[in-house]
Length: 343
Ligand code: NAD
Image (tube, rainbow, N blue to C red):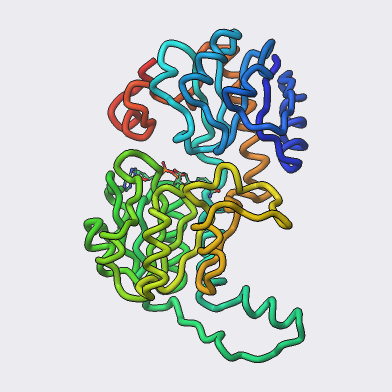
């Protein structure tokens, strides 16, 4: 079974080769991302394996189908880069719904602590034998209110971590988890009451630019915004304005709306054309990591194992429990309402 593997990074290869070999899946690794220009590389393959920044639009899907490609195996949870509705009746889309919520939730707390305790600044200083503490005053999480948007797998782990710090946790979710003991509030109440806001919901029509000029205006002065979910949950221009006007106290961003051509690559020595990202990075109270939250040994192994299992299950039985729903384009909603996928 041949699978064209797009946007390969050096850390992907060992785990996918290991699990692929054990199950008879032959991955053809390509460094390039999947796009209309590169889809041709999948010729002769039964499937493609893609990540968050591969562009799987309608033209790419049609091209893959013409070449006889049967499946799109996402090696991630999010699927906003795939035109899922266009796939209906044409090609099957499998994803990895969960691989390690701990990886992302722990990175979220790592970013938050780094930012508010100025660890990144202290690290730079002591490397240069500067032991001054001026400007490094932080604040304590204990007793602060954290607003968690999205209480699915990752959000729930993050809630538990925050409780361990003695924080007051409030949450907003389109589908609140009944019996979870989480205190749910409306989106506006969350914006108004939180000292820290952490985003853990998927990107969809409803959540697009959830953090914008209007929502920032409702927030407490000095709010810390953390996004380890998807970049376009935040209107980056509005965030930049909020920081410049001192309304937003700090931002921790593992994802960025226009990350597709920038993140995961080495642009040191280049002039980055994205002025908003460049300006955000210059801010002393903005911390950016490059979509790194998932990157743990445990998560990489789980991702490879589940992706290979999805592929073999699909080709052996014609179906796979991790196949997305095509009609509603939202696997969470569909699974809540129906027993089977709408294919
Ligand atoms: P999940 O499906 O378990 O949980 C998502 C939750 O969001 C659900 O409870 C759902 O009801 C809720 N939700 C859906 N639409 C919403 C809306 N409009 N407003 C508020 N809540 C809404 O997903 P998860 O595994 O917890 O992952 C959360 C997100 O984290 C993913 O969608 C993905 O974008 C992101 N993620 C990022 C990384 C990374 O490396 N930075 C890695 C994995 C996942």
